[in-house]
Length: 198
Image (cartoon, rainbow, N blue to C red):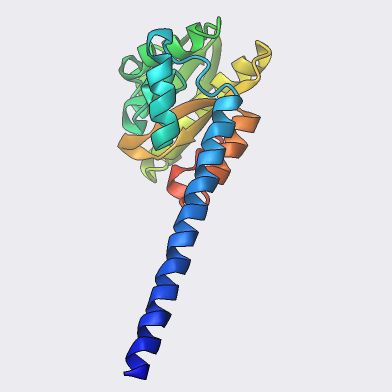
């Protein structure tokens, strides 16, 4: 009987320790979500939905949402094929809200040379080697968003696009350096949810 009581106390204390760890993790994440909000993360959210978005964001902490006007679904395959219409309106909307305009298109010989134009600057999205080893799905989006980020720098914006996920799930999120740092802390231990530089 003493062993049974001892065992129940041990199991109970283990569960209590686990509960405290979960509570501590939740409070830590909540404080980071609040810090992200205080660092203007929801600044460009649609004004008609700002309050409900803020409450939902604080409750759920879901950062990859188009409603906050920072995130756009890209799809690496669409980008690599030069199908910019798939994400053009979302990307353009995000930039326009900041008073920015960045033009982008493919060249007439895109099928052969895989060239893209960003604000009148021509560059190769990927080459035949990338096409043959299937790295074009990774290289193309990185080169595209490096070019877009270069234009953001020229316009003196303090935000840059970061990529998240890959392949057909690829997205891009526009962040300040501080917001990026907070999101890294929020997603420690879950590298899939951490945006990365192009």
